[in-house]
Length: 610
Image (cartoon, rainbow, N blue to C red; front, side, top):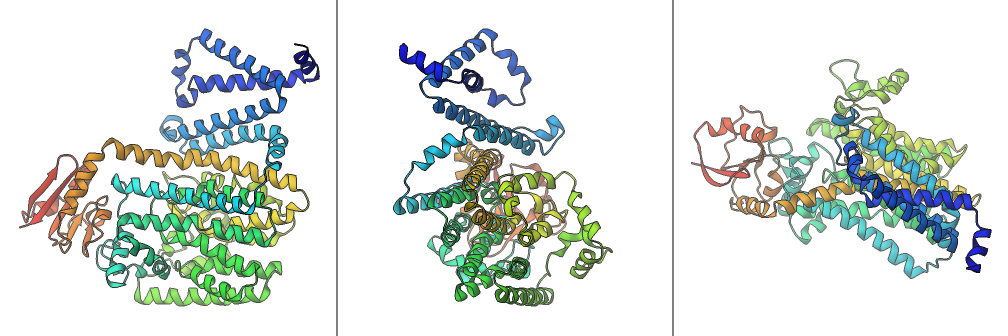
């Protein structure tokens, strides 16, 4: 008793009471499951006042008792409880229809930002206690390697599972999955990237997007030729950037703990894995290729620089913009002027040559996604350039020009910048680094094409690589000046990243897992029915069935075919889960050329040509 009285006399009673009240309130909310009822006002009436009061009193007393025994323990408990509660709230916010309920389609992002603020305030209060604990951890070389590899494997596993459950629950469609599963299967057979799905006629994918980089992953596809392996390739390419992050960190002599902090920030950064939500796309190669190019420049490795510069440009016809941006940065920052000039000349030349080839032999580059910069109906790349040069104020106005019924650019910028903003703005007067934001502005913020400013699509991968390069450069500058500030900025970024991950990424995995488990038997039957179609037969199919028909040389997506076009295919595969999908086959079935051969009620029907 005397010991306890001595402890109480040394305590800050006001701090203890406030922290105990916060812990009591948060734990009461957790026990009562208020995080599950974010938009349910009626929930308030289901909890009795006496029950609520008893919980509060019990948790406050227990928390204050802990404070008497160890002050830092309660401070840490306060932060952990607030952070856990915030994460649960963010996770549950994904199930709310924010647009219809609150007339705000970006409500989830704004709600998550508020929860980030609360968690960051709680962290700031206890950061010295957390840093003291971390300082006592001894991370040796083997432990560092094990943790780094495990982090990459966890990211790979998460994105892989997301793709696997989407595939087996028939949730991915022709775009952007069926075209690539068919393309890779054709590459495995004939070594050419031909698909019939992308434009509903036999066409090289390179006529749409010039992406020789796909051949780099072809050996991985050969390991087991299955559509799921295409998503595993994307998962691998999004996990591999852990390696250049380690290399860059080692080059700048970062401590192992600091490097692990950057790796964790990359893992939980919402753009990293949320961009895989809509399956495979060549942009997934960009992060690794760009970061390896930057490492080669920093470490003065000539051959590596040449290889990864060309690999970066081989990702897509617009990928030279990253090489041009890096080259301009190298010139302005006086880091590597010769390489900067090489990159500007090479990137510009590559872009001009590929653009000419695609205009002559392909479908041209997709500059129509920048049609808000056209000044007449017959828009072109030259019109875009002229608008950028002659009317920059108009271009700036496009930052707030939105497409109807799409996520806003403000929402996109919150997701992109919130975890990184403190580090990004710490570069002081080194304005040359802001040049690295040019692709983000040109690709994500100026166009009104809605998918380009949505983190659930692949268009953020390239700009994200440059953002992390700025992060590494700024940390390198700051770590010698104020190491405590550096640790705080990374920690705050990780906290915001985890909460954004909780609201924007993790719910997708649980969504598709639950969808698959709820109707697993039916999905297996649908798979079996599709497998009964002979591989040498041509098929017209619904969009959500085409990824499961990748082994067929000729498959058409009826969802993207004019309704009066009758495809003379051997089979029809109709998705009965959607009436609009069934209606798209009406003109074909009315010809009386097809007979029903297999059907699962309300799931799928297979017709064969008579």
